[in-house]
Image (cartoon, rainbow over all chains, first blue to last red; front, side):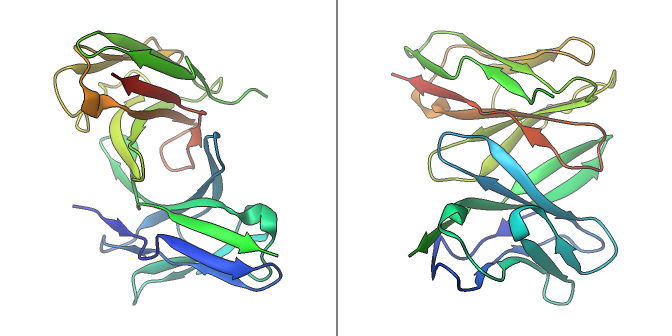
Length: 115
Length: 113
């Protein structure tokens, strides 16, 4: 069975500093990986995805993620954090079976960016 | 254009009652998904619909849960004889095809007393 691990419940970082939110996945072969962000009282917003191609994926709001097959990781990064980046971040892995894409989500990482 | 919408935004019900949650996907999106998000946890897949294919119901936690979708439009998730453990945020998502990102609605927060 697929599983996605986000080992940190919370990440604290100072504004202007680089941030990393960690994610590891379980499936072998060629995974389909996604990052979503959830702001309070709002639905999930898509940030970026890895399907194939370059290991460094660029997404919305200046975020990027690096796919590392040998470490089965897909960490989310941003060179310079903003207070407005504070939110709940979910990593997800897609399973394309039977004509659909069932996403398996991690438990989420709360990012807090402080002045 | 309009995103995925869900109604109601909040629903409080008594244990044993039936509830119906509605999802309006983005127009033209052939795939529609339902997920459940319990407090402090990640999202759990419940069911998806893809065009006219038979839905994948493998994530439904019990036979009290069911969902329908008319063509490529509105979907309803029905929970019969609600239990307190059904309390969660129910999220709907849609996508243009299966190998692309899903767009999520704001969710319905269900509280079972």
